[in-house]
Image (tube, rainbow, N blue to C red; front, side):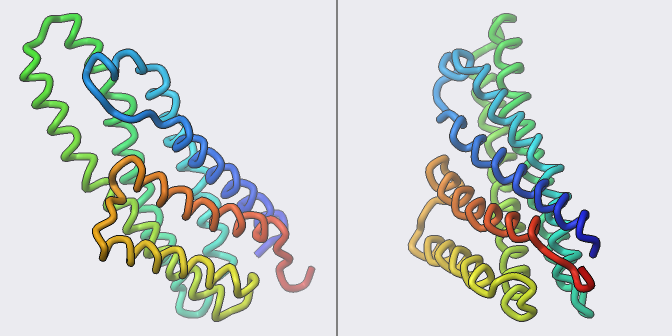
Length: 213
């Protein structure tokens, strides 16, 4: 792995994680149709940042996978599951953050029946729900694999691997006790936890020195 590539991918991963955190800081809570229309601008901005973070995260994850490459190529399995989760995030962000506000603005001006609008909104929520689960499952699976490889290979400090595993195991415990990770508060907890691991990892990836350097 080239030194410049590790630095570039680490910087990309760091940027993506910061955008992800900023998204959750700005992300407003839901509400009535009138409330959504009132805060339409902040909804569009926050979800645009989320979608913007995806290519940065994907490139950074690719660099991480190359860095943790072993004969089994398990790091690329983690990359595949992470990309699946990011793709689901893009779908959810597009529907909930970009399509919904503009859709509501259009149909309210046209005087569409309010019950019809609410039914369509509810249908959109049931599309987003599995997307959230796919995102959480995809990233969690990837973190378990990457963290295990960090512990095994010592490419990065072992504590980073253990930290990643602890985050996921705490999340699993939360699921067992019924904590709602797809609600806004629960999703924020998940994102901030994962982002803290990614930001630390990105710093070490930027400092990574391949063999021979």
